[in-house]
Length: 426
Image (cartoon, rainbow, N blue to C red):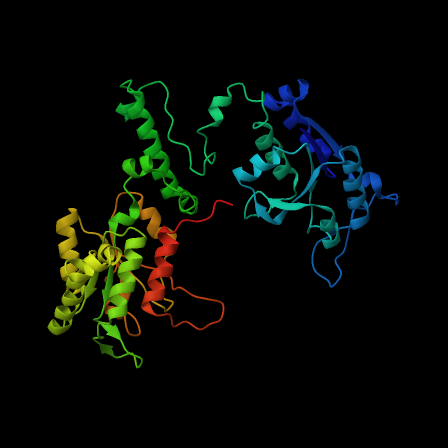
């Protein structure tokens, strides 16, 4: 693998390339690193590589002539190279990117500086990458990170290639906790499972720890991981500890008056189906009106154990999650008794209010074995008196249009997808 680095500060790389595994890999000819300095492609005595921006503004912008010339010089030495610009405007680098880039014959890494590239320079690269959602002084540090991350994937660079198999991000999960001697350090002991010699138990513990750690620290990665059957057996899915409550009182009407809304058949069926799809522990319908509770129980009963259960077993699975209760307090009491501890009570609203948290905050709380019940309001939303009793209130579901009047069925499906929906790996 050959790396062609385009930078005005090639000396920054000296000690980095001489040390440890990279230095050994270079000595053995496993990787090669060459440099192109845009200053070498200037015509003025000051070797100018930047200029003031058209349209005004602070800082200096990198000039296209010397930078494109340096890129072309690097590509002339490595005609099949894949060209990458390192810029804060690029896509954050992921392990999957490193694996793909490691399959290339050579790479040209273009290190930005100052206020960034003249946009025309970027027409001479194939891809733009960044180290993350933050700004550095230049692209040299991201280039080093790419070289280091890619080099270790090249055969023979790492002494023990087996160590790559269970590293963080290798399969989309973070690595499990590691321990070495002594067995106890300042009161913190090594987990007993690692000391017993049962390799299967150790493997199962490590799998469970990887899933828990990823959920707690990087919920967005957890949502991209499709659990295997074995992982489902070892790991208590967070969705199974979450319950949904459709609240018909106390809620607001259009005039912001407290009301009790009427039950709808669509809400019963569609929210039950969403709850079943995402693996929730249960779905409560909350209404203080006796006749409405009886109606809900008749509808649900038809699908839970009546003719509907035989006619449509999929709907039976969904409606089997439904329980009907008169108020939120009785639901929390029932869940506390069943679970063994009080669940987090999580409110939702279409309105902005202080102290709201994003869905990922709830997801990380669930990584610590907490349970939760999410209150969804009917009408024009949950009353403030109910929201003030909640442990957490989630931020609204909003679009760019400024229109914000989703049906409770739509809002529920979107929220559950944000919390528990699988994401594409690409």
